[in-house]
Image 1 (cartoon, rainbow over the protein chains, first blue to last red):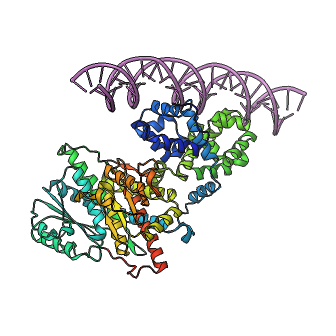
Image 2 (cartoon, rainbow over the protein chains, first blue to last red):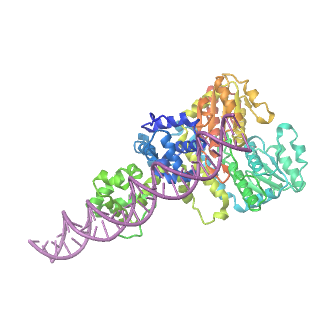
Image 3 (cartoon, rainbow over the protein chains, first blue to last red):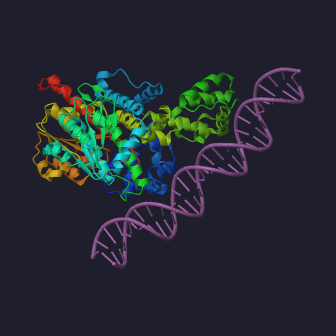
Length: 290
Length: 290
DNA sequence: GCCGTTTTGCAACGATTGTTGCGAAGGCCG
DNA sequence: CGGCCTTCGCAACAATCGTTGCAAAACGGC
């Protein structure tokens, strides 16, 4: 390691970390990511605390700092601390804004849509928490766990939700079949469902015909149905064994998917817990992203 | 000193210090002034360092804290640290704050995973708000608006995000091509991209090879790239014209998609606003769900 | 599949930090 | 002016923290 380096300010340090990132070892890369992503935590806590939080030994942090030209981790940490103390002029104001609990501000047009969307999504999530009972999740999870095959339907705006469900459930070792409209076979594939399977249908206004039909047929055929929709008055309601009515909040032209996505994850976590408890699944409990 | 006090958050502490200020001894008053006027320094440095800077012995600081009901100075300092951690990019502390804020009952096992997931998602969203600047969104939106065709890549866990993007952008009248791995043609289709198009790549650890390769090739071929990923250290970073680094936070085996999904929506809203302003799109501005 | 290299975790060391007992300095009232 | 009480600094203690040497493990090349 060329000891000529050792940046003396935060920005240069971050830049150096980015440069060297690719040629670092796996653990060092994780450290690099943590440092860049949690600069405040780094400034405030001790090496041991930080290391424990990433599941890496403290000594690796020290060596990481040394490989960058510092004498120890303390020296590197000092840069993070100086950054906080010397933070931009807007910083103190932001702190105070948060302290006074003022989440929504006036910068409507300037700060742009993002703030509005975030606020909306948060509201959706809080709403979700109040409307969904753990018992329902447990019931649905049990159905999914016991199912031979999990069938999934959801079109257009609901597609991302079923996509996520399919991904995680598959990783958990459940057999999943996506009733994809693009092949044109969805309805016919749906007719192959049996009572020992389970159907998860996701649909919001205006409820896609195909999804509603599949749900109805499933109900008639005795296939258990878990429905994620927007109202207890939804056309999915009558056939559903478990019905999740998640709140819907519009913003300009699109609706929030935060609540249904979160609910979907909650479902998968519940299923995973059951699988693990029953020792049914020898699969890795850690699903990795992409 | 009534030991019934000992505030548990920064604001209450400052309030208490102000209340007691007048009846304090001279040195304690100087301490009080320093603490309230240099909260950042207090959070970062050691007692000795702080004490030295005011010309007061460290033990006085300890006793000061004890007179307020704490066991030692460390305990008081922790409040200053939490304040910094919750003020700026800092996820962990925010989760802790939210957990107590969202009136967490004992129902750990009962209320189940849902509450934890909601808390995590909300924290992710708040984090998102602080990390993404409106300017970046505008830049990306402009790229998307001007693009002849929008190409989309994202696999596994990222698939829901690109799914959503494809859906809304298509509804807005943009021509979208999804580089879907299931056909096996993704890489080859990617080679048909031109500089007048735009590529939106979504990928998180561990970055799928195919996505990274496509992004790299696009960068080399001069195709503008908008990347949604988890770190500025991501392999997508070097080719990206706009890079959205949204934080990633684990919960048991799955990571939150709340932030990327919200960001995706924000992007589409920004694009929609541009299309409408320029009168480029005669399409209905109201996308309906399903 | 083996061996040399790198990488990583563990344990012990030294250094630093936070805390406390004690005594001196300073202020207040008699 | 003197005695008592509060207040403060010093120095020693215990705990924690950062660092490093060493050995095991993982990795890569042959």
